[in-house]
Image 1 (cartoon, one colour):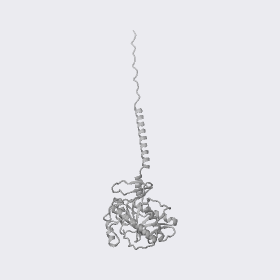
Image 2 (image 1 turned 120 degrees about the horizontal axis):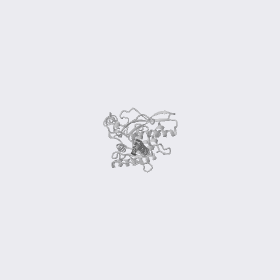
Image 3 (image 1 turned 180 degrees about the vertical axis):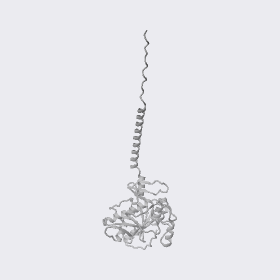
Image 4 (image 1 turned 120 degrees about the vertical axis):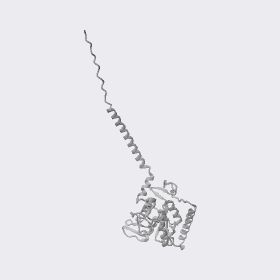
Length: 328
């Protein structure tokens, strides 16, 4: 009798573990994610490199040595006659006050405030200017006005270098920001002082035309230094950067008008209404004056007419007595 053949079942099929496949998928997903993140960062970095005009503007304002205008050697200044600078630099207090209120801060009651809280920046001696001992003001300005001051100092040095390339001088600032308390004290001591001072808004400086700080090179006469400073101010004034008033009490009284930064003109006429600064190409737009009221525009037209009449009388050789200008 034949024995029954036992058929053994085949061994179970060995299944490969799943972990290599899972690991491969995870590695692939991580690689794709890293590539995506790196590409996004690169594109964001490239965009930030080319587009942020406003951040560039802010960085210039934060730079204590920033300037916004370069001296033009081909500029032809007006004819400056000794002791008759007031006929050229005659931007009166009404015009400068309107610009100071437009570009600056509200007046401060007294000293001791946190000036940075109001958007002011400190003035410290640098390569362009030095600040003298201040009795009735504190060394703070709005950032745009500090850039204006640097630009004045740089332009003055460039004009000086055209005739005296080996001489290096710095201008001296004699008055900056005044609080209401400072103005009251000054009014009691100086009969030419006014309560409606442009200095209360952080946009105005007084620069001496008798005092300078010599850094190197041969000496230059005071009269020539005054002429070089006047030429620099005339150029910047014609460029629309500032208003200038010639004070008979040893200084030029200067107020910020509008800013020129890196080839663009930044007009702050709507600063109170719009926090974002409008940037206009310098090639496409000329500096313009804006007014909040018709009285300021009327006063400006009157000053322009007086300026033209004074220039004509100066050419004819007629001299007319002018009362001393009040210290603004």
